[in-house]
Image 1: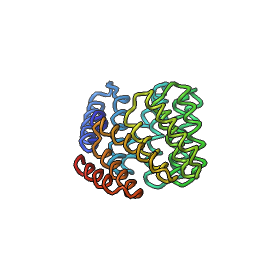
Image 2 (image 1 turned 90 degrees about the vertical axis):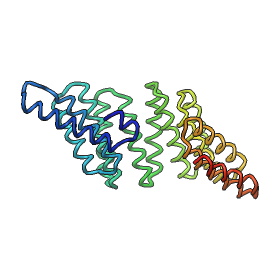
Image 3 (image 1 turned 30 degrees about the horizontal axis):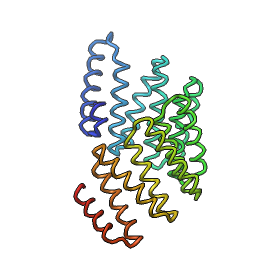
Image 4 (image 1 turned 180 degrees about the horizontal axis):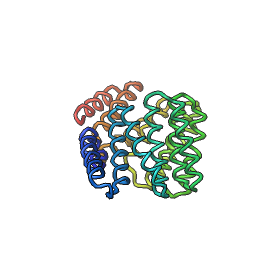
Length: 274
């Protein structure tokens, strides 16, 4: 089930988790000495993730709650961390349901619980989620504050991949605050971090957002270079749809500078690879 979730095959994963949960519950009923609680919690958690990505949000929350009750009952350090992760996932489901206050409340609980364990990565993850929730609600300064602290914590933990995410989201927040020069610097920093982490898809995303910034700030030449790099990186990781989307945006930039031949060529290339 977890492997299918990783492959974005959420319906198939949900079916497997249902079978696993039914089997474990039956074995535990038939033989009370069998303790599958940890494994059962993992299955409920995996099912919650499948349902979350399928948009079945209330069912997702219910499955995560089932996992959380088992993690909480166990009480080990590992289960405490799993409890924190589960609360964060429930918060994501609430955010997708437009229940902003409930989401922020759960992310705050996750942050405080991580702090009590001395878990800097847990704190950073909670702050990333808070930042995204604030961003969605248009609270861009609050989002920026959260992402910047998360970035520092990821760097402290040596987690370059997630540090790149936090810095990139800082760039997006700065963009919404009309602080364009700082936003460009943030995305450039995110690219450098993601290069160091070897995270090519993340580099492509940051180049794409950098291109958007150059386009909006009236620098079409820089935008063309950024979009072209983003398209090549998406193509490098086999994301043809992402590469095509970037090429279409690049074609629009060529139109804006009245280079219609390149615009037509770029749009045709986007259609070919889609």
